[in-house]
Length: 377
Image 1 (cartoon, rainbow, N blue to C red):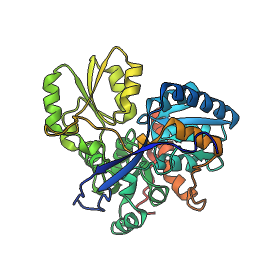
Image 2: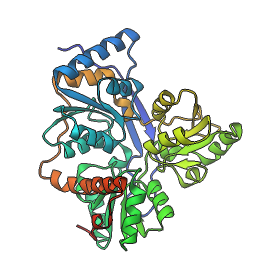
Image 3: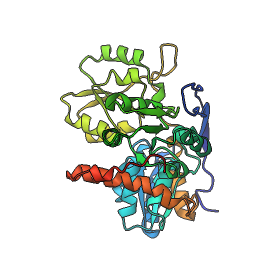
């Protein structure tokens, strides 16, 4: 038996109310996670040394999301990997020479990496690490919702399963969704959006697009409280407020900058302020504090006066990623991501469409030909 076979965990329960909006219902009323116990300093050093050796031995590269434990973020960058958002992680893994990708994040990220790199081995520290947006958008119910609106172009957020992506016309991230929806609206297309209702509502307000929404939410961002954020702003009157658009509309309305994880990083770099209140998963604070040590970053509040914590903004499933689990999968090749090979070409098409659009936008090339009038495909 290898030394990482038994990983102590702490079970954590999260409650999520059931929504009533149009579209499907977010099914994640009760979410759970196995949070790895924190290693001792001696254990941490030994695990990191073993992971470094295994990455070389297995011709593997780490990709980690901004929301996972700081140990995994630091180790990814130290060993030639990447810390970023889900699509950048997948694109980096596709382009890297390594034949094994180790994805520290949640399952849809591993699936996206596999879709873009089907010939590579994709491992994850824990295959049960998932996402409320993914869980709350089952493909059968989502397909039925799409069938009710056959005249609409189906646009899904990256936080969805491979099967849902395969049902879509476009996949988007929070960093490119506005540009893509604006282009679709300019082409006269009506949109079916899934799964995050807050992000969808933000895009609809910003673009004026004709959109119907699936009713999903991120259990982290959905909990930010505007009245508590207003109180925190009064305590820190010079602080700028950075908000991820998965947050409720009344929280977004209080923002000095609204953006994806990369957008929040850019705003913290560019804005003339030394103090920021940040409304996104608190795993992001490690990167912000590392890049901008002379600035102060404060967690936005998720709870009211009666709560025992003011901000518990951390994804329970992201927290399932740990050093011991990472070492274990590298040791024995377990937790290999599988996507039905028959599904990959269809799931890849809307991702490739998004990548071509964003590449053209970045280079200044024409985008008109990249927005075909699709409707339901």
